[in-house]
Image (tube, rainbow, N blue to C red; front, side, top):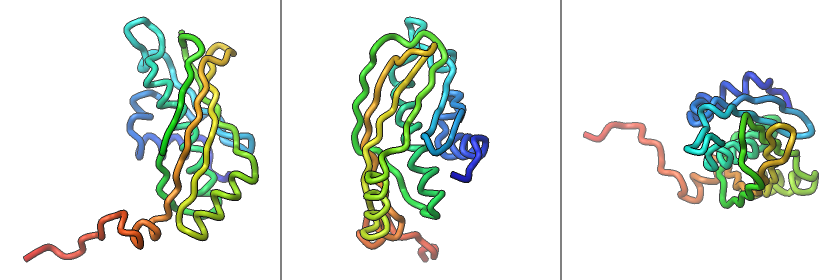
Length: 167
């Protein structure tokens, strides 16, 4: 993976503004996976713990970031969308928190790449562990669909770009 944590963090803040509002930091991008972190303050709820939506958003973003960085490393530009997810909250999150998305098994990643290259789309399910204070506080599982822009245009999934102004 050739992108630095700083480059990826800048990309997220520009293209996914919620990451900026949540004060998300990219802590690690490597062969083992992606680790994001967020402070309590901008993600706090009425009970002075992390809002569940913020915890889920950080998990979704960690997995999305892993797919984005790995696809970019393979020279692929694709649309990445979450199809479904499940989150299990194990205990209240009382402080700053992290989300770690491990790199999927090689066979799962290879199947995703093969689908994207052959059919213009692929799917992968990723797991994320949320932690705070050294303890696991939540777990997440999400299915992501990757669509090459050309495949979207061929299937009529994206409207054609308008190049001329109507008279």
